[in-house]
Image (cartoon, rainbow, N blue to C red; front, side, top):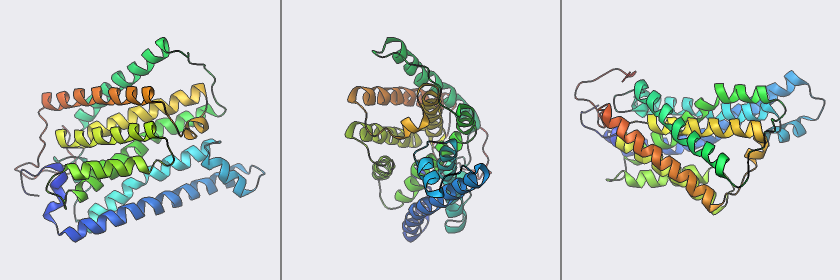
Length: 302
């Protein structure tokens, strides 16, 4: 990899047809892999539990997250997208997955740890403040099977969150960066796709997800890697699923299709505040935002 290359331009040294083919294969792989893994997990759960209902009814309940197996199936299916990104980088581009992690290449674990801490303080602080001063107090009503749900949240949700960052802010941002002289086209297109693939939603909820995608992608440009976006995504999802498990259910959270403008803007403000902190941390740690002058391994530790 030549020195001085910004993160969105990592794949720009290769023929454009590879990037175009990669985008098609990434989206197809996302669709196929998530469907296959989800079906396999639900099928295995049905065989293991022997629930005494038709498979179709069991599968429908799983899709709505009405049992922990459905939540596990969905989480694992998205987590498996990391394998899609690895395969495309390895076999189509001839590069290790580390070049999607950062320009070092590889995950900068120290920075990731600090970003996780900062995201937890900002996001959970806002949630706690809202619970205290909000018009409706939280009602603690743990859902059935809470232990199983929390195990999925702790063990799988971080991988699921990271996989979305590797696909949207990583691979798609880099492949789109091969076609346009400015990285902002890739930032906008990948963020629109990220928000749209969340399914049916009202305008405030779509704007909320779009804003998260735009902020996460901007952090990639500002820090030279995915660590800040991964941290924000993990903290947001772990917190949302955990809170839903204790106060309602994962199924209720899965069924949400609308959000008020005030709640949407509060979330965006929290993400924006974290983004500022993440950039300041990156500067404090003196993280490079372009590829190094001397080739390094694929497992950066900074």
